[in-house]
Image 1 (spheres, one colour):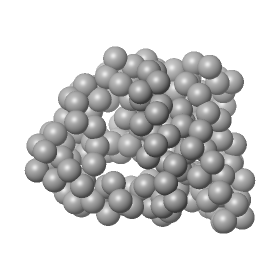
Image 2 (cartoon, rainbow, N blue to C red):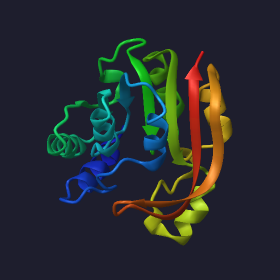
Image 3 (cartoon, helix red, strand yellow):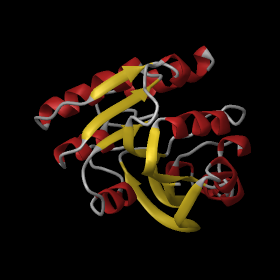
Image 4 (cartoon, rainbow, N blue to C red):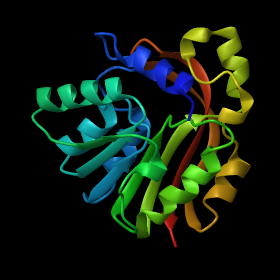
Length: 207
């Protein structure tokens, strides 16, 4: 990824406040509470709110992001909550995860450049064991209309970085679909996710 992309996230996460708050994403919390605890990976985890929640719930947590500032905030949040998480900084292809290492992978607003996102999904699939679970929530392509009307809802402003149901079906074609839907939701997450937005939600079990 470009230095511009990395610099953007380092700048956002270098502030004192947590950009998306300290509490977990509602959908992640709802889904995780239905699963037996195990090992879980959080790609593009930023400041660690979801990873810390999982660790507090008994999961063995790994996370990564391209932002060193995000890692610093995540480790601070983990310390505040008396848990530990394994957090790496870098691009996925340079990290040392192992095939079938994880029981679950949580992609929560893990938006990547349009030309990379499918390849990243397919690489992540290798790290999930058979019968493992993907939990996914991110902005849909319809979200462009929402962020144009209300910039405070946040999210990418370029169509290729946003998701469609068809893309998820293609990227995770070897999964039993438990949930796959596009819907309007109300967000209230820190300073950067506030207002109505359009999201894709996906929960799948690897066959």
